[in-house]
Amino acid sequence: MRQILLIIIAFIFISVSCSHSERYRQILLDSERIVHTNPDSALSLINDIEPSNIKTDSLKALYYLVKAAIHKEKENSMASDSLVRFSFEYYKNRDRNRFAQSADLYALHQFWVGEGRRSLELLDSMISLKDIPDSLMIGLLQSRIGVGGAGFDCVRNIGYIRLLQELDNDSINQLEYKYQLCENYQFAGHQEEALAMIEELINYARTHHLESEIFQYQYEKVGILEELGRYEESNKLVDYFIEHDPPPSAIPFLRFWKALNYFNIGNFALAAQELSVADSCAENRIDIDKNYYDSFAVPLRGFLEYRKNGNIHLTQLAKLNNTQHEQLNRMESTRQETEQNMLKQENLALNLKVQNERKTAIIIIVGLAAIIIGLAAIWNIQKRKGKIVEAEERAETLQKMIDEMNSSLATSKEKEVLRRAMLQQLGIIKMVAETPTEQNREILRKISLIDNDTKGALVNWNNVYEIIDNLYSGFYSRLHKSYGESLTDREEQIIVLMMAGFSTKEISVITAQTTATIYVRKTSIRKKLGAPEKEDIVTFLRNKTSI
Image 1 (tube, helix red, strand yellow):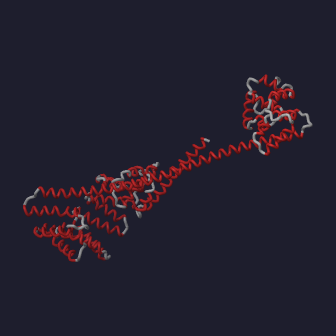
Image 2 (cartoon, helix red, strand yellow):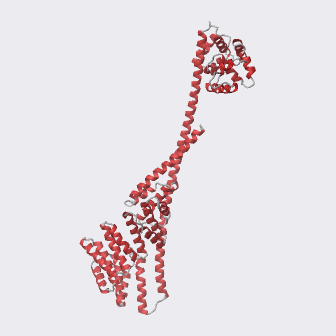
Image 3 (cartoon, helix red, strand yellow):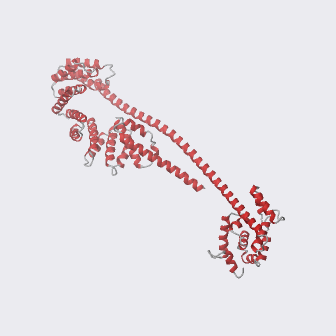
């Protein structure tokens, strides 16, 4: 019974573990399928996964990959995705597609934690591989261009953008690639190429009536013209914007461009005037990042101050440094805040999962207890049923013996004589009387008709042995003399009853033992007597000269 319970418990825990793994695998596969089109739904799916319950490396690798991919698609901080390196290592020689994806995500993690150089090295090494599918190469190139742009690695970016234009046939993306190419031309010092590209984009936007893009591209042209030294053209374009009701958030930056153009022309008075207007337009506006604006305006103020006074004060440098330092601090604070929010969300999800796990554990414990109770009840029922069957078999055997006695009272066969004596001396009456059912009362009445003097007395085995000796020429005395030291009393009783022709079932009734016990004792008797396995014990004893 204990072994069965242990097997059941082990089976339950294995089943629970397997069910966790299979359910998690399906969730992750579903999340992976929709992560690029619907990252919010993918996030909702994986929130049902408890990472501590993931036991296999394959599921861990897939979980870290999907989680990092969600952060990338949602443009969240990837500073906390360090474990995607496990996915990168796991898939290296197992799954080429997921290896490329995890490399992309791991490189972005490195960028987020400030390891831009290592990020670029990893992306460059992946792009150099020959067997990466175009769909995955596009993602690697896009990440490389983004990281390279942040690090002003614009010369190499130009080649990657041209490769991206060849691989990606999406027309919307092609427009973005041209704009990225223009920006990288500009920061790489290729201003003529940048101007040609921005003119192409402006014409495309006008042809397709893309109003917001027209403004974006012409605004970019202002800066390119300034870089080319075409200050008057740049200012004319700014004036055109101001006359045609530009977005209010753009006005401070347009005024700043005019101030910068006048500064480069050498008209410092107009430069200071335009910068003052730009400052007033940027003041107290919630749709403008003041720190971003100041990162351009503060240095220009310092240059104007130098042109005016001929010297640079420490306070000017400190103001510039403080502005930059404040901007860096804000960026770091934003990053930390993002990570803390993510941790809070993960903790909330973890607490919810712990509660669910507790409920699941309670359900399992209750179910296990119910199973144990049910098994115990079944075992007790079977045990009682076995006893009832055994009792019925004994009653049936007893009834058979009684019927045989009643039908053969006139005979004097040895077997029948002993049967009558046994029915008179055995403890059958007492055994039957202990369970006063209607059937047993009838049996008791029939037994009393055999010999009214028994009155339910227990078996007197000495009398039985005496009868056996009288009927079978001293069989019991010779048996006891030869084997008395090795045989037990129970075994001697079984042998004499077998000698008298009683069946195993009848012997079990007479000796108040189960038939299984009688079979076990017969095996023991056979070994002690040295009787062959297939030879009848009684025949063996009769053939013995001493018996």
